[in-house]
Amino acid sequence: MRRLNYFMLKGAKTEEDYKRVKEAIEKLDGVFKVDYEMAAEVVGVDYDDEKVSKEQIKSAVDSLGYTLII
Image 1 (cartoon, rainbow, N blue to C red):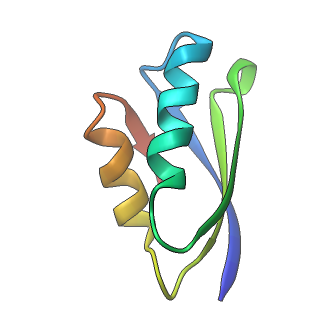
Image 2: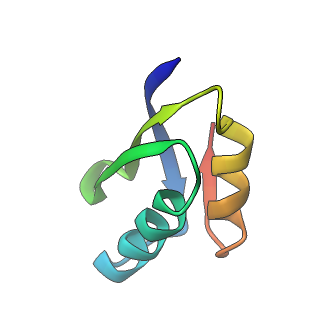
């Protein structure tokens, strides 16, 4: 089922940090779109929860050294 979730992102400070996070999430199978709002420290992910889980999204971000709160 297609879902749109917003996650808090900790540890990202710059535009480049957010771009790295966005690219990592976009590589996951089942992700349609990723947006972010730096001022709010939020990442929005539009994804198919039958192909990718919140935990997989979190793992992809955490592996970069940031913390995604699900």
